[in-house]
Image (cartoon, rainbow, N blue to C red; front, side):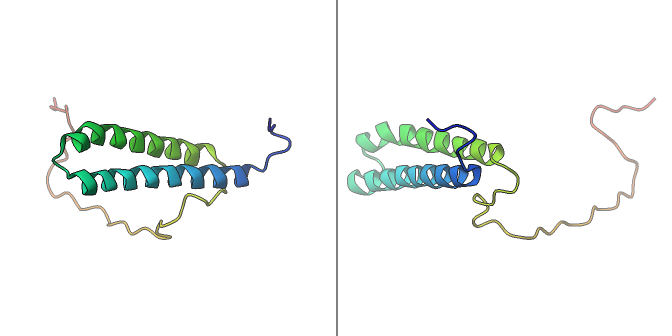
Length: 105
């Protein structure tokens, strides 16, 4: 059994992320194969489709938990993420400012 003293956290995060991502991709590919083989309108596909989607969503949720649990310096999950972000400047309000629930007075 691994303990905190003899485990490299970044390699653990990399390994788990890679494995979970592969599982998710395999489930999505399996769903596409079943749809292609039996047809998207078949009873077999419809009976298994929701379960496969649920499993893929569950694995994706576990990936999100792993990303938040791993150290901030870990960069294994930023594949395909843009290095910069563009944000529009806020628009100027010309009239009175209203907020939800504020009636004045």
